[in-house]
Length: 193
Image (cartoon, rainbow, N blue to C red):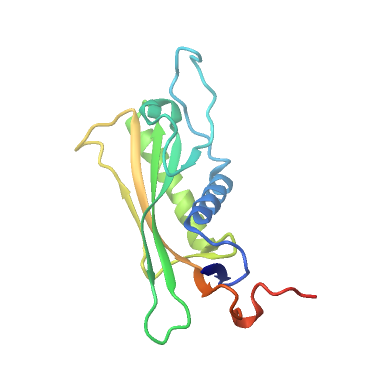
């Protein structure tokens, strides 16, 4: 029989990709909260007030209603990797995050500028901060890629779309199995009394 023990890197908190997304969402909301953008009129509201971008993680709720979500930003982890090279005391972890942006504007020029402004606001905030949640570090060596989708090639008007790809260095969290009843390494799990 085995029992499981957790060995944490860094500050002793659970450090997961989910926490990266939660911290990125909070950081994005804070960084873009004063950037108010138009919202598409609806049957319920003919002249809606401009608002800050909604920020979502993993998936948009009710994806088919994207027209009601704009302006919005969606953060998703698209890949992640854990590597431990021989001689390294602990594995290294990284996650690639795709941030999709969508804004609404009836005017093409204003819509394109609004999208670029929203993307730039987050890009500059990330480059200034680099570490979010005191544990997730933007990998500047991997770069911060941005793409603005060409409305001429695939008309999306009155919606304007873009994407940002970022790579994050993650602290490690590792579960180890030890034989039940055997001495635990480094006093882990032993009473402080």
